[in-house]
Image (tube, rainbow, N blue to C red; front, side, top):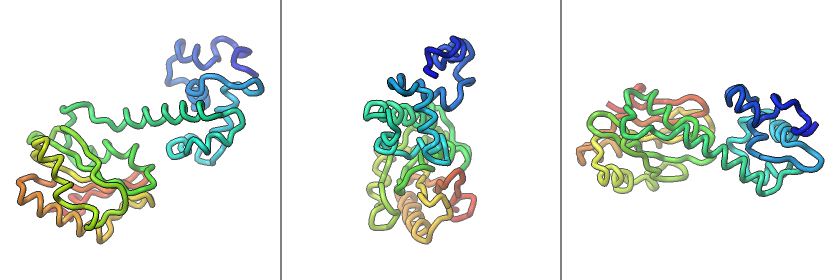
Length: 226
């Protein structure tokens, strides 16, 4: 059945206006992102086929490529880009600090800023979280992409954003693509090196949070940072 053949109140766009976006199913939301269907399939049917590509359903969209979406007959380059652009916007909004008044009050609040974005990365990404003397977030920076090692992570590059922004304290955040956030011996060695460098610079390292798949490990909680 094509969308125009559905009762007015059951059409995704109309339903969004009359009932609110929270009442739309994953299939309906995806159909709205795609905009239109084809001569043979409605946008709802295309959305159903996309969500059935993998057992993970909607989670598949967080890490799929345009080429994977194009496996569904009726989805070309334009529709694939529309869908993934919508997913990426949602992810960025979910992980964007709400200005300088976002306050960090523990490892949980640090992890919440990065979890929904970093848990899906297929490479290790090392971030620095910059804070003022009140513990309010003033910015974030990506320091490196790739395996965490002392040859890649150098204190000069790590603390440069903090010096430029006059940050009083910083926290490090990186992910483990395996989903297991247990720190490696290299993680521990690099962090110790950076904590020592921060002490010399007068910039306190308050934590290093390792992001896994829906879980995290805090160096502060594990007493790996004093």
